[in-house]
Length: 154
Ligand SMILES: [Zn+2]
Ligand SMILES: [Zn+2]
Image (cartoon, rainbow, N blue to C red; front, top):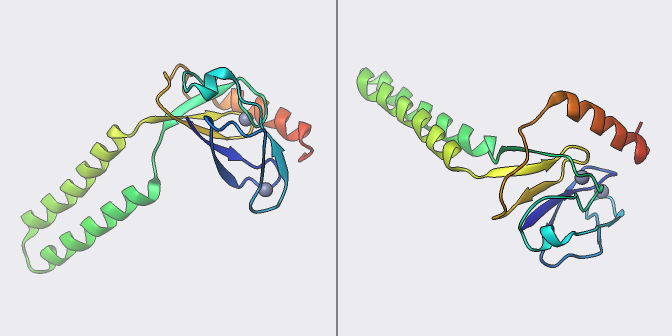
């Protein structure tokens, strides 16, 4: 399992392999030491039962989507179709635009889900079974505030 641990001080994303299970990592941006606690399920890539950064058990699932990649495809498609449009080939232009949008959908649909910690926003990727529910705004509000009070950011 690959974990993107979020630094409690500066929110930098720090990649950690759960198989290595380091007891602590140092933030490359702000230099803060972050102690990590890995459960057996995390090490064995079987489940996300406890966040190694904040110790929270509440997580949600979202699509592992990189908006930058999708946007680039649409922009490139729009530019190419614009050129065809300029030369009066509307049908070609529209089909390229539709193709770019469709390609986006396919890429989006193929991506695996990523599990995210409600409190510290650390991300978990791996072959484990996705059992968590989708994002819930109310849960996020409550847990984020609790976490930020605990680490002294509020
Ligand atoms: Zn940091
Ligand atoms: Zn967490």
